Every structure is written in structure tokens, then in C-alpha cells.
Length: 139
Image 1 (cartoon, rainbow, N blue to C red):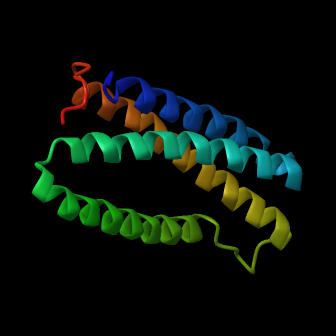
Image 2 (image 1 turned 90 degrees about the horizontal axis):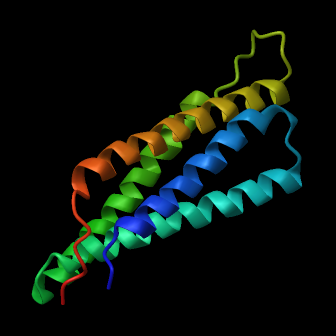
């Protein structure tokens, strides 16, 4: 009823804050803290993604919405595959390093979280460009 702007910004803000905290605490994190951070990050990400999907599909005519939904779901799976590949590259373990595998993995995870934080900040730039006005959803 009020448009996508506030849920998108709130979801992305939650994502960015959690990524910032997670990036700084990676080396000292516990299983419990990582689980809590993951839960909160997922809530923020899903709030923004669900809202963007709803707002995007609302721009299509009723007969086109099934195709739009298929495109969104395919793009989400493709982006997940690319994200997994990028995360794997950032978390690689160097067998010649003096650091333990656990330390190298934690450092790699920290690099992934910093990268995700940068993407979350980039989302604010995109939102500023594409959400110039707070138009309500159309039927």
C-alpha cells in the first residue's frame, strides 16, 4: 500500500549493519554468535528481496507475472551459484602458508563478509537511483 521504499531500505540497512559487525568479529566469533548473525542477516536480506520481487512483479500485467516470477527465481538461483563461487575464491586456503587452516578459513570468511558489506552499501546507491519517488503498489 505504501510502496517498496521503506522495506527495501530497512532490510538493506539490517543487512549492512550485520555485515559490518560480522566482518569485525569474524576472527573471535563463536558458533552461537555466527548463528545469530546469520539469522539476522537472512531476515534483512529476505525483507529486501521479497519486497523487490513484489514491487517488480507489480509493474507487470497479470498475464506477464508468471513469466516475471520465473525470471526472478532463475536469476536468484544463478546469483546464488555465482555468489558461492566468489565466496569460495575469497576463502581459499593456501597450503604453503604458516597459518593454520582454521585461521586461513576465518580470514577468508572475513573477506567474504567485507565483500558482502560492500555490495550492501552499493545497494543504497542503486536504491537512491531507482526509488526516486515512493509510488504505491499497483493492481
